[in-house]
Length: 114
Image (tube, rainbow, N blue to C red; front, side, top):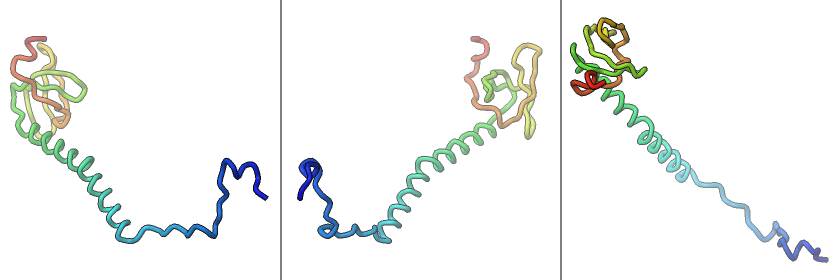
C-alpha cells in the first residue's frame, strides 16, 4: 500500500537502477595531469619569475642607489658587500641590513621629495 510520502518523494527501487561505474584509469590520469599543470602555471612558474627578477635586481645594485627594504625603510646605499649593505636612512644615520632584504630600487631623487 503506498504511503502519503510517496506522493511527494518517489520510492527508490534498487532493482531498476544499475550501480554507477567508477571512472576509468585514463580519466584519472588526465585529471591528475591537469591538476599538476594548473599547479605549475598558477603557483610554481610565477614564483620562479619573481625570484629571478629579485636576483637580477640584487645583482644590479650599486653605491648611491636609492632603495626600499622589506620593512619599508627607504635610504641610499653607501656600501655593498656580498651579503649585506649599509643604508643611509637620514643624514648621519646608517644601518646595516641583509642584501636580500632590498625590495625595490627607487627612481633618483625620491628621497629628496620626502
